[in-house]
Image (cartoon, rainbow, N blue to C red):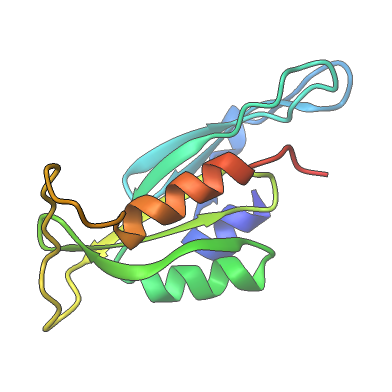
Length: 139
């Protein structure tokens, strides 16, 4: 939860915090903007399942900077995205994948996509496909 506070200015809802009998966190809630994330520790016998999270931010570059400073690995640097937006992605230290959506990059053309084109993958597509193929449980 400290990561969420440092990277996204997230705030825990103290009355929602619950530890299980084994001492692991079974439920907590963190507010990021107008969104609420439910968080729990992974039990030793649970199958690894990363969260795939989408967050709207006011500046992708700043959030990426903070995330890297707290151990995240960048998947996609800030890039123009469809719908007059920008997109960046990272994997946090627990192997969760974050999509950051921010305002359009001034002066950058909006990407286009033609499924019939013979061109290679876009950066946006290639970086997430590579990251998901290589994703492993945290150590």
